[in-house]
Length: 145
Length: 145
Length: 83
Length: 83
Image (cartoon, rainbow over all chains, first blue to last red; front, side, top):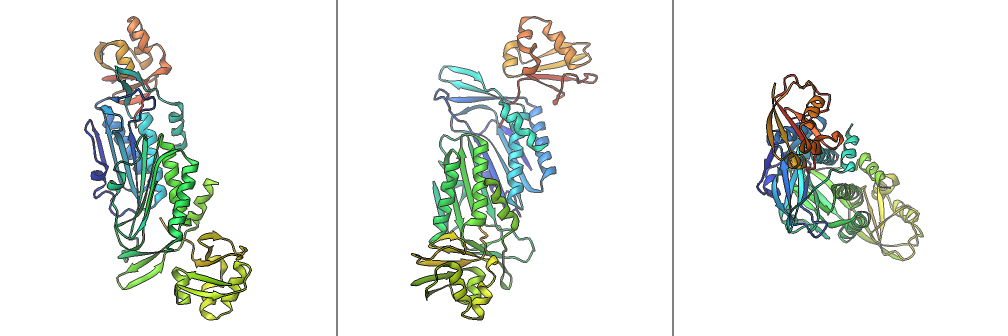
């Protein structure tokens, strides 16, 4: 299991090198800074040092307890990220595809609403609005009950 | 949209270079040759030249019609593949994670049971059993009706 | 009518060749299967259990009632195991 | 009891600082919130609407009835937007 909370960019390829030996299925998810309005130049991600790594690790351990994974990785960045840059990624490895897909979706649902990160849009004139949490993201957690 | 049916190995990293511009979410799935019995040295993948590319393209087009994808790729190999080698991969890019995940799972479910590939296990003494299709894989298609 | 008939995986192995040209008056896939099975043991071993395999006509999956009116290529193969 | 109180995102902005040490006799998170809101406008703007934010005690998410008996660090922040 690899958990990294870092400001630096990462390479998915480097993460996957040697990842999940013995697995039949590897799923990755990458979250990318998206400009929906044409007015955004970056995202600023604030986080809660100390709690962040702890809560991401707890989420990853829940996924490992629930599915039979041969490997699991989470990288989540913070700080200022330009449009088009990768914010984070998860990777899951399992014998069969259903396990790898479900575990990756579970990780994403929990990271989205339970890991202490807050996004703010940065426009051409500086900091703009904080991104609001969506009811749909909170609801997505219910499917895992 | 990129569709490749080939015997040669591929690099997921190369596939993802420039993939899905404008997307907020990229999902990849890789299928790896797995040795469950400790007796397998390779898989031999037979396919139906002519029909293969056609049916994979049709499956990809169905996914594009169903979800709002900014990009989509499928690479599927055939021929002899050693344990640990990647058999195939799909990649999907969308604005939101639910679309990217669903489209990737849809592609996998259809590629598994509707693309004309047949796997046979190769043991230390040569060709062994043909891999049998699983009822669960056929059933998995029902969720998309 | 002349048809290219293709066999894959264990169906190919049981019949002993990957393809052959067949002269047939079969109206449907089912008729063609009956004609092939009547050819003898190898074909019977490969094609008599219709639930164990699939059929494509001109590279599209079809069912056994599919008509062969303008068909050029018929393929028989086990359920797919891609991915 | 002395508590480290941390603020994040728009809560930090409204209060005007990221953390402070607070001397309190609050038994629960709810008591602490009342005490903070009573400090004036900035705190009221940040913390009076309890449905708009979350609380962690010693880096674990808790609800407003959570007791502060052995607490050392309390954090207030908006619903998370990670991923």
